[in-house]
Image (cartoon, rainbow, N blue to C red; front, side):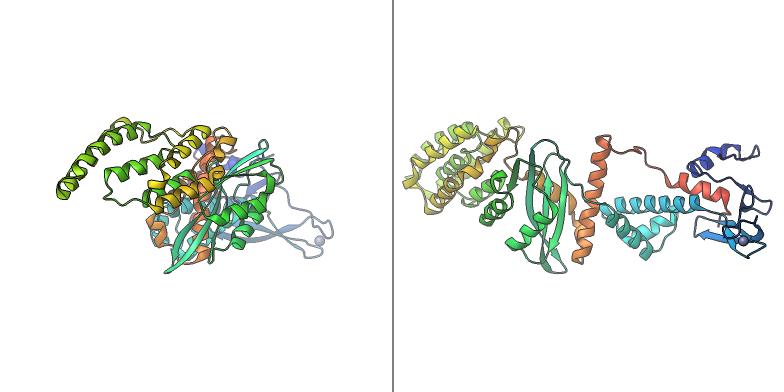
Length: 445
Ligand SMILES: [Zn+2]
């Protein structure tokens, strides 16, 4: 049992001291000289005699406090014993953890170590190197979250991101748990080969507990082989429709004619519903044909102004900037419809349509799982938040980049846990609550 004798002046500090000793079984007291001693002199472990007082040692935690720790000596065998200060050591480690977290949040906001050093002078002074080491320690200590095994289905997003580190292109690999939007693993690699990707997934994700593994990737042809060989029959592989749409848009020049724009929308209309846009375009293309016989210059400015009107009109009724995803059978019918005028299309568009047709099962994989994503937007959103321009400047080595990336993942994990009520101590302990009891016990320095 802990009893704390107080004077009226320090009565209000009991709460703080209680926290410090809450798990302690040992009875202490402070001697008149301010030395921390046991209530009763200890028994010598060697010869079982009662030990005698023998001065003290000073234990110091820089910038926080120092404490005089009682020393004992055995009168018979000369054994030396010090007052056990486990509580002090534990508190010190809590302080380091909190400082580490403050640093992590500052770093994720793009703060450099030089700036952190300045800020730390107002909280708890640390040098740049020691700040850097504490940040590294906290990041290394934390783990990426392995997905909880809920049911037999898991939805994964996989993507790679090009990052320039010291003038060289490197690749960031990310495997994201779609349901939690938390990364399962991330790695930065020098080379991007099938083998590197396979090893990355294999060593970070265990497919055993799942019956179905739904994976969204971009359209790189090798991904299909990679994931097929990793997950076999369990795999449902969705190619990101957003990436496909980027490719479709790239097939058309910016200064396209309205007939070209109509063709573009017919392709876009396969997976998402652009019926309303197409009706408008068809009307204008009819007018365009009449003008085309006249002056080319006229046509150019006419097209320009019509397009402007058109986009404003589209934006007016697609206020949420989204078009409904089509039911898979409907989408397939739209593809067949596009095929009807295949012969009249330019060769690059024909190639694109053949490519869509060849991989149609991967583009429509979303039909297999209700609410499954048809794009990799979850991971794109994650990328855009984790590497902001300020953080990019701090990326000088592969290891450092991985630390930065992981540090953000930890922040996201904490937010997620707080939101879900998974964090046991929902309210973080403040530094002052941790430091004050030590200051009360020791001499502030
Ligand atoms: Zn002894």
